[in-house]
Length: 418
Image 1 (cartoon, rainbow, N blue to C red):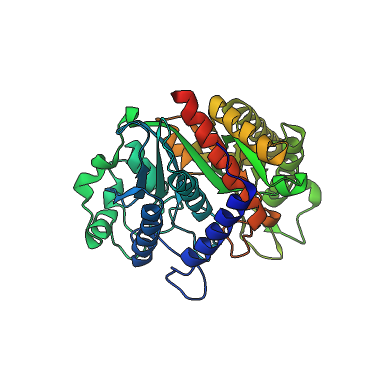
Image 2: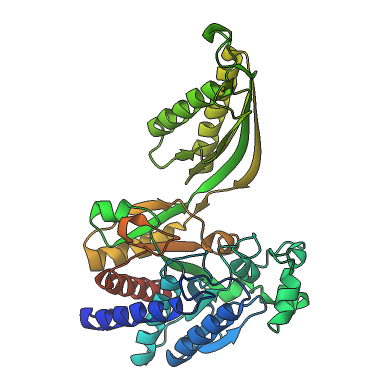
């Protein structure tokens, strides 16, 4: 079963118009911001629910605020192939991150509904209520609700105004005591597919509209410190200095060079740096800097991190300083399922001629879902790879190819399960 090019073009134009409509649902008329359990979140849910219903789905709001739709399979009560992404945004966001995945998923069901076709599997579409963590500083609330992995502490977590998750739920008619009911039965879902803009430049550089994700990068974040000795900038000879900033600079150059020499899918970033005492005429005695290391496989990631930290210690020892590093964030790499990758790759090759396999450097709802079910991801070209910014831009023709490939993969996976 294949959508033809004319049908795909109409579907893509509808997706683009709906992205614009959702972008207008914002807490500010000047920029797009839509956070979890806000009035704008509820309005977006209502609008997406209408589109789901028009596509022939039964629609409901689950216990954590996800908007869900189900298109029954050939047999009532069949397990479902779950499609989706998120409807919340960062502050001053673009209009495609998250939303594109929800709206293209609806289009796959729309086509089946118009053709009066039923697959061996049901197809469910979900618009997750919170992936970004903008309001409460905790991420993947929507997808972790479905996966049944909410920590016990989350309902009491406050936002910037002191309103807890539980209170915010009460304010919109939800009940934190019922959160466990959002968890789906393991046998109710076969697999999860997520379409998303690429938050990087690889597809654009390759001249391709679509690519298939191999894995979502694991990440380690550390706070690091070089401690030397402050001194007068004019009176301490160069040979006597214990300059913490010079040590940090040497280490930063090593981080960049070493990471480049490793697997090209590994990345390392020093994103923040502060010096003390911070005066123009004083040798820096202490430097605190961050280190963010990411990669699609945990073992190479750990090897890289170990080599970087070993060198930090060696630099400090040679210069007569102390080096410390404290890890404060860790998430494992999430591999995409091999069979789902194959199905998506075949679908992309059918509509595009060839495909590109690439990792995702950013996190997605698929991370939470992968704890219980196989996951696969399809990336769509995004101009210059810009994301979390109003400059996000996708082309209608690319979206048309994406909808065709998405539908083809859904149909193939459903038929294989028969």
